[in-house]
Image (cartoon, rainbow, N blue to C red):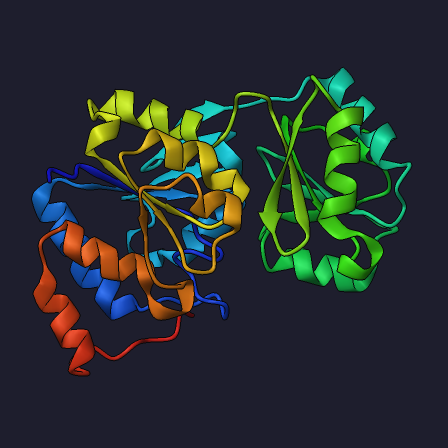
Length: 286
């Protein structure tokens, strides 16, 4: 097994349910990755500026496939920025206006935007995911290159994702691709612009083949990436559609499934023994 790149989703995959990870274990694995020339790629639907805060000490050494592939960065170099055409942005905003019960974030290069009419609860929740978040009176006033919308649907009792996903897929067909991203959320992404397309840009840059890559995920927005990589892993907590298309399965995000498998992929079983014997104690992420 000759692994040259490892791509990981964040929420529900690399991070546990409290948004933490085993930092000491990861630091040891990252040192091995650097020594062996293995690239570590953060692949997430989250904002790039949020993802950087997760890996503060090494944030400028990593590669990022952020915003579900719409924003690709290698170290500090921006490789790709997607764009939803302004007329299509206007159409999306009009369609979303039909659903007052859906809360939306509009995502662009310079930051993310929520309406001033949104609830304080929604705004405070989004601040956790978008360090650069601005309130605006209308989405139409925003002057930015837009590449994604993130939506929170009502809870399951009100239909949730199962109700709104097919509606949005029909109404926005050919404009954006609605995909689930976990926790009753839907992302509206540029057609053909997903985690796999972002990862392919990095593979070309590095001269790495898909059969030399491992990827980890849990939600439908990970599927293209998981299909691309030979060593594809679904978390125990992954959705059924993700579990159905991967080549391997691992334990849940709360059991450090990603770090467990990376230890094996890198040929470092001694790190697993240290965990089992309590020689590595988990640190809480700041």
